[in-house]
Length: 159
Image (cartoon, rainbow, N blue to C red; front, side):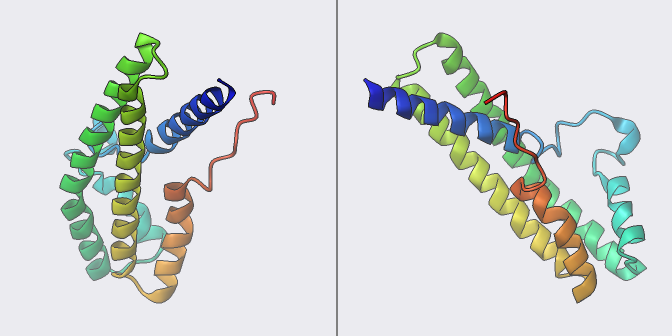
């Protein structure tokens, strides 16, 4: 009984962590603020690269092309994340926290998170490859903590 409770608590903690990590990862097709997007391509947000990293026009054109090429991958992963979350939410709402279906849904959500994070890391490194060494380092120093969650502060919840 005690072992089962520990496993359940670990699974819930892992699912909660995965939710908070992935909820901001793949948002390509889920953001609705049209004022900050250029046809939902998020190209205006890339402008900081041009300014902050002092990319020349050729580099910036390549970065934009790389970003647009990644968009279908991002959107497909977004759909997988949303599907996994919906399934997990439905099963969790049923209250049977020891069902094999809930365990499978937790595993699926974790697997989708890993797939999404790997794809995004690959994309970041491919984008960095279009820059000079110092620009790439500055870009990765800014972006990697966002992707791996190192920028997030843990919440104590009074514990």
